[in-house]
Image 1 (cartoon, rainbow, N blue to C red):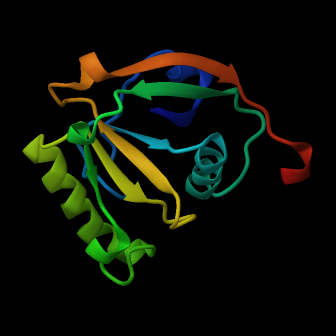
Image 2: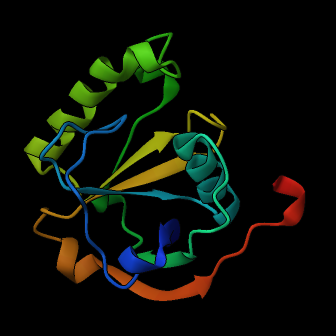
Length: 150
């Protein structure tokens, strides 16, 4: 399957993770957040940056991951607290993601998007034993902001 990440040009040439804490991981856990589509990846970027920054040279990273159910753990909204879309739920969601990360159970954690709950984000564990064999950067594409968004 292909998943998408929008990144500044500086960080778009290889699959790497900063280890920064986010919704589904704690600090020091090296995961890559991706979306199921370019449009979802765009919305996620806008939400996390709190605005559109056209002066940054962005690229769309197209990432191929092996299409195998054994590599993916699926989290559904019924597995989550009622307030899972709110910032206050971060600690609970980080615990879920951290338990998955630490268990090395699967390469990918499929989670509902907090921006569009019926779509999904795919979190890739860069420290998983199957990472190098099953996740690869296929290509990058130029990215532009439509002036109507600005």
